[in-house]
Image (tube, rainbow, N blue to C red; front, side, top):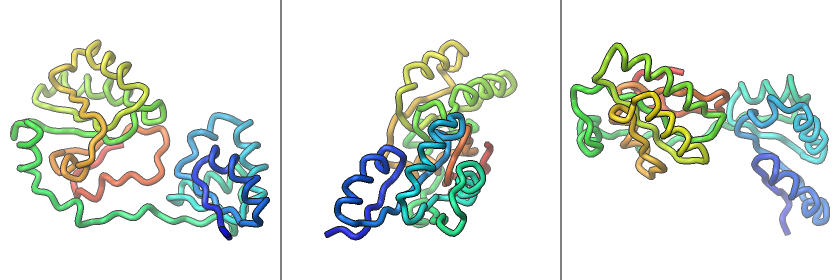
Length: 207
């Protein structure tokens, strides 16, 4: 018999309430960000009502905790910050070898972003900024790692901006640490982000 039900994100919480109540289990809920609630007052109210049935809320960072305390009204004593764990040994890749495998020139300044191709990641703004950079420095590359519902739209945007030779969509990858090792600069264009991990690669990061 389960004593604790651990849910992630709003939908899991919603559909777990009844089974947890039937079996007398406590609910511990986890949120990774707050984008879904930040522009929707109705969603915030619904979450606040659902949270009444939870024993605790865990979040991945202090900024996420601050939002749920100040904007949603979660009692501070019932919210806990548990950062995502990172295996540091996974990021010890030689940059030169990684660049060679990806077909990158040693003369290129390589930028990269990792994330789902969804609205909250705001890749469109990143592409527009990269267009301005290319106008001043031709020998620059942008690697977009990840997949999602906006991939076709973003690829079209890249072509419209004339970035076909400078921007590469790598899709979903299982070798993220190795790809990050090839970058000169990690970039992050997200509107909201819980715990970005690009800093572990010791390279410059821009948000």
